[in-house]
Length: 631
Ligand code: ADP
Image (cartoon, rainbow, N blue to C red; front, side, top):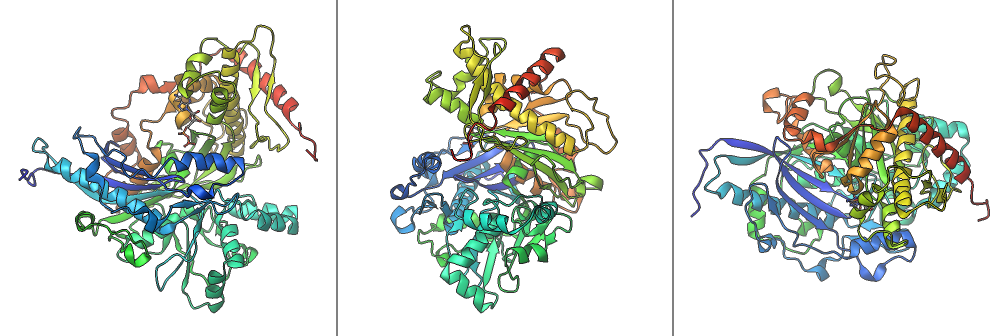
């Protein structure tokens, strides 16, 4: 019998569930942001239904090397947990089917019950790890899960029956483009004034991404859902992934959505924080016929955890009794933090104060700029969204925080292109060393506009272009210019957001104290694959100039950490919180942060930076409009 250590002091942990687009994970975090236990499942997919179109084929290829229910569990205490410990749900693939399906080109469906089951399995695996850690005779404390937070892919739309609890169709994920016709039709029906009015209210452009178009599609095309809608007897429930999880994981069956997720539905007015009749009407949604979740903050008591009954939902793989018992040990623990994934990573990167921004350099880049309590509608094509809302905190910190959001289409994928198409490198990690063989790009400018340019240029007709090559140009110059091409676009977005936020001048040139209510950018927090390369972050710092510090995140799991922070600060009573306030969050989480090797400041002389930026702008001008209308 392992020695019990129940007399030792109890150390609170935060359990987080992070539902991504291609994988789910659960992590138990300590107050210091340390991962005490972690488990991840990549979604299974249908091999026979790979779509033909290339973008989705690539997504599919990445997802189909999957069905790994044997990912290692790791423990911060250095306790080896064997992989066989992890067979808690009897996986019988054939009786369950895949989590992701690609029924037609451009369609990407997720199975809501499988997402829930994946979340539960990840949680169970973490709790098993925790039990082992707590049984370690050398441990002088006893860890205990105190609260639960959720981060999730946004916009994905799920409709289910209140009577049976079962989904009435597959969930339509945010990447699914089946709503293109609906969106095009609406775009043609309305004039520019109406478009501006809608953007003012929602912060969003009309696009296939947002939930409203997906729900409209289901009501127009799914017979079962339409019939239920016509009956109008309150059976139909709509939710995004956060709502679906909270509904199924709380004793009370709480039917809520956090404000950051709600701001991606296209149903919510950014100022009232509530559904808007005009918006519902615009999409032809009658809220008396379909129940919409209550919009709540990102950090409050949503409900008490209770293990879901997966077999009632038609998930036929049994959870073993042992697994169920271990899940029951957290029954009653509050679920009290929830954020959409990009907002969660803003919080996890500690970009908590107005004027901080985060950039995730993955395949593409996602940027969020915290504009504090001011709702700003971008005049440069950035989206307006909610960053977070932590009402338990005092003063301005407790108010809803808005953010501007923008993205760069091609980021890490340019490195893959140099590797796979030009064979310039054999691994992505070789790009930094190759680029740093030269001190600058030798006058080469590389615009990686493989599929056009996004904010702030907005040109579908632009294409990838390399300028300024000479006999002297080497592969190192090209590699460096490619990285610079990504970083210049990040700067262009931040510059546009900075001017939306009221910085009267270019933030590169101005002192931090400009207009009183402006929020000039002071720090760019970074994560994602490309940010592993010091060279990339140094190039980014040189391009942004001396007013902005570029910092690499203290953890690769910023999204999950953001959800943990939301849950940890949710308690009304300060003594109950994991972190008292933002200062406490930053102090505890960055306690062991290696500042020197993760902070990058501009080293390039100002005159060179200005010259390079002018050259970039000249190149951008020339690359635009390459395609003709009929190309
Ligand atoms: P995603 O979540 O979009 O799949 P990741 O955050 O995993 O993206 O980042 C993947 C990208 O990061 C790849 O496109 C790859 O080119 C790039 N990458 C990975 N490792 C490195 C590295 N050491 N240096 C530079 N780029 C890298």
